[in-house]
Image 1 (spheres, each protein chain N blue to C red):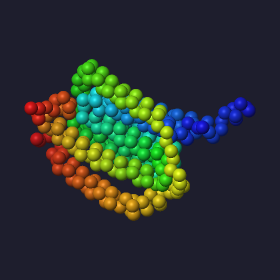
Image 2: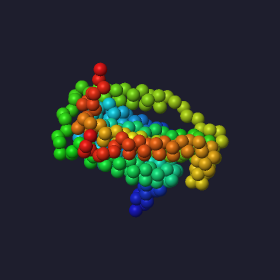
Image 3: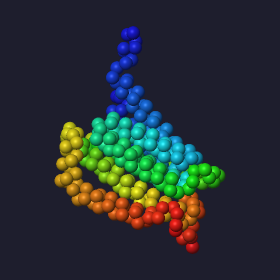
Length: 177
Length: 105
């Protein structure tokens, strides 16, 4: 009993949850990239995005974690599902893999992985000397409407243009050309 | 030092996610799969911003604001990309990037 209670501290529980969230993220990403069926790719992306939102929780930002689920899982994944339904039928067999291309991609991404990993190992990060402790959503709102008001408006304009552009480009569905 | 209280953990995780996404962009041939990989890369960038925000930045709201902007731009990008994919399918009857060779000189 004593051994169990010694193990079951909040710290170990939090670490276990953190490892689980990391595993979810990486496993989902591997499914999203590796699976042959395009629908499994989308589901893997969903799993990975849930993991990322858990990481945001660990980074003290529940609001951004919620937005991650709302925007990525709720909007982007669903939009990708619509695109899958509107494009190639799923019953067609996927074309065989191009070995040279897969090998080249693996070497390229592994090269960049090693380079950035070594860079990360070498870098010493120094925190800002004075750090505010204000994590509230109210402050985010203040920043959005004062310091970042211009970017905020530009993003809304971008979304409007993207919406109109998407409607214009995709009008007509997959039928008549 | 706890695992989730270290900046390095998050940076390495973002690095892994970025490498997986980059592999997907290079290796996959379906346009939708490439879009999914790009979303993974954008998420790696978001994790980096949030980690620096948590451990280094003077004002902890700024990184969250930037992450929200990344999400908005990703949503716009996904909408445009998906409509282009539907248009490409209508034109070519395929969303394989190796078949989209109409502009090849």
